[in-house]
Length: 340
Length: 123
Image (cartoon, each protein chain N blue to C red):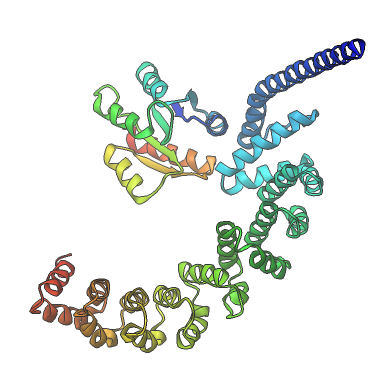
């Protein structure tokens, strides 16, 4: 019994020693790799800078750790560069086989490796990397999918738009920020592609992002679709009104006046319609604003006063009349606008 | 002509230094605001390329100190920065920044702006 216990103790002590040796060896290895990286990084930075400034020939790194440092330095430089120098660096990375490395990385079982592969391919964004990025749209990791989707959305002449649309609709609830970036890139490069994201059957979060993008980059081709949403009584009427205002859609003025005056809607929705009328600047809204600038709700009054200043002489006339209102609150708000 | 680059990112510093050296300038480097101030006072460069966000002393502080000192008041400054809101640009111009270059940037374009700034200030 005692002898058995002794064997266990000796075995445990031996195991501890082995573990200690492994830990020490790993730390030495890590420290050596870090030192090598620290030594190699300045050389990689210098090689990148000299290549771009003077076309100096680049000697390819051979060790995997050095290749990784070289890639990181090049990607970091690309994030700060624009124009021909950025394009030259992307070309160099392709010449040094980083596109094929990243394509292999995208097939890795490790999530971090796939993410790095997607980021490298997205930064290079040439024909070969776009082909690889298309496969990343179906990756099981959301970050890989969104990195690939954004890079593809920023590229022109691609065939993967339906796959990008599927990816953003799938991920909108879990990664709305990343999805918004993709939709913004789509709107800038492929404005027609946003149509399915604005349809009534698209998820509410998706429609909200698409409307914000349409408004932000003023995609006038979507004005009829937004007008339909207004007439239909969309779930997100305030966003629809904002969009029409930012686009400056004169045809939406009658519907926006109707929304601004409709007491059944919340003041925030009505205020969005009033602000949109001010942005469009059509003087036919002045009569409606004259009533709203005297409304009991503070935010509606303030928005109407501000919007009247965008309606030219008819708006100014309404403001001057309202400045003589018997209500102190109305007078103060209107005078603040007149004096600004 | 001697140009000082004050920038904490070694990658950007080397990109700019290589471009300017290829264009025939003598290039000095500083990694933070304090080192930038000390180098300007010691080496009297003809122009300073300055990052806005730097350790120890930020770019605006460096401009303020340089413009307050009669010995360094006239040194032309090109601000290289990702912070280019209207407020930043106006703040920098009010302090005495001569030229702004937003990141991401083209080193070729930066070199052209430096050339233009030097032509403007050199009698």
